[in-house]
Image (cartoon, rainbow, N blue to C red; front, side, top):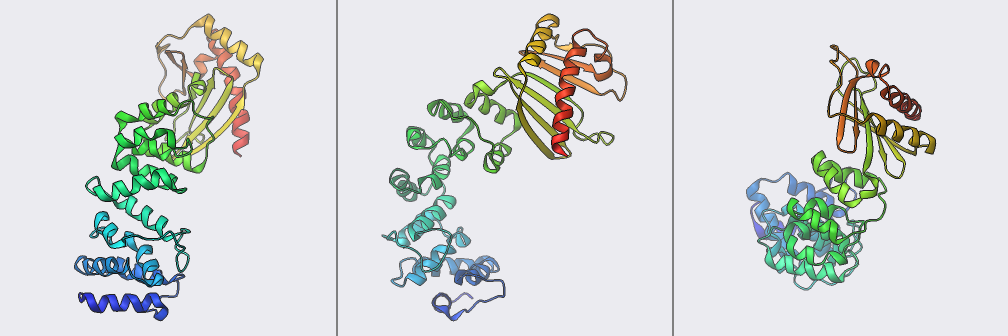
Length: 338
């Protein structure tokens, strides 16, 4: 469909309930329109974009609702600044049907924010005003961090600690400064969203940022054994991390699957472990030549690392006690995984 007038007429009829595009799995009025756009050619999508841009300021709320609901389907070719010009003064009124947001203004703001580029100057200024004035600002901060990181840094005091996505959206050079501006950070509460955030970043960068955000939680001692991808290792790589406050974190990685648990190490076990570590020290070296196929243990303590064979370590003074203590906790955590 390349005739703008005819296409706009079809879209209007569809959004008024005449259902020009309908499939069995469609739930909302805009579902058929969205599918039609996604299946269109590049040339046809340009016409869809123009037709929808015209409908963004329609006096019929059904037209505005549908146009805003499918806005991201035509961006590009539609640019955020052009869409903003088409919107005009959009009232914060509820949509004609459920489009996932309580108001047309919020739906439009989030769509434009997600698709804007740093060249969309008018959109960025519009979004900045909403970031400071609207209750749904949390949905906009991540996009503003990408669009104008310097401005966002100046507004850090307006942003809640829960909006962690800002950290990943900022340039790497500004992340530490943002974390410092928001300090102190509340204790970390692992959720699906926080785990997804850290997975977006390289592991070394995630560890660097978390050490700045949660310094009390940084491990004093780390014990690691196994191999995540070894075909003959049914358990995978296991890591025990002990913080200065006695929090013990268990992580098991086996072929891209990850399990985590936490507990507090008993005070007597902590005292024994610290005494042993102080007594033997840990040299940053491979303690003894390891036989082929050996089960390697890595022990990190403060700024030193020791690597040894699990079975050889059980015969070495000090290290045998460390392995014994760690084995007790490993067995308990493995049972929790079953």
